[in-house]
Length: 319
Image 1 (cartoon, one colour):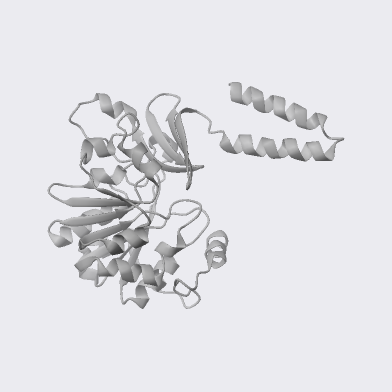
Image 2 (tube, helix red, strand yellow):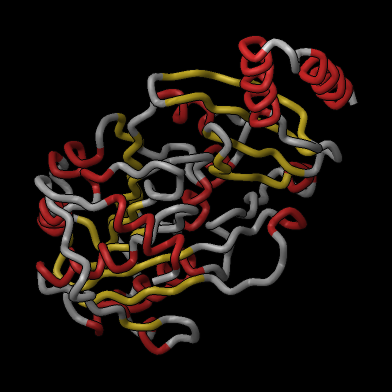
């Protein structure tokens, strides 16, 4: 309520400045900033700023969910009441990572195709939700560029995914383009989860980047790329990059109709790359998955070429 009262007062001040254009512009800009920061129905738990932006931990007003925002983008959620169910229970992954969603489905089918996974690399930590997809005795390693995110995810007072599901989880801090390439380990599965925000780290999605991932990928391994994005169409980019490396690509857009505000399970768009379809088990035949071929009008991105404007236009125009 105090925030809404402040906005009403601000609107009154703006109206009083109509005869003073310079002041009017300043007050209007302040109004945009305040309304952009306001997230109705949420209570601030903490906020921390790093080189990579501002992270907000929020709790819903009913006390049921704990959320992590990077700017205005939701990067993870935990159902707080799950903690009281049993000390030995694991929290349920939410947002894009919910059980039954495209990310979970792709992990399960790659696991089945291998008869189990030995080593998994995950680029992007968030709240650590994916840690609860790990099964014993699998070895999962996360690669995260922002140390502030690591501190948030590891703090059981904020989120319990890591503390409950993988308390000894190795997390490598640094640019994943470099740290994954420098790893001495080879992986059955590599998950790229760095593309769901408003801005994307292009250098993680180029042909040269994929080449470096493949050098760390076991024969028969797979690459899962989370490409949900509000402003850019990235599926055709990944398909083009994969084709240059002789990879097959399968994509799925989550079709759930349930509004995420009711359960914080968020629709995801996911693309999976592999050297051959058999490496993905039954995934290519599952409902909603389809093979995606390169488009003649979309070139593979490289370290010397990318086309952000084209990705934006395809998304906004639906072409």
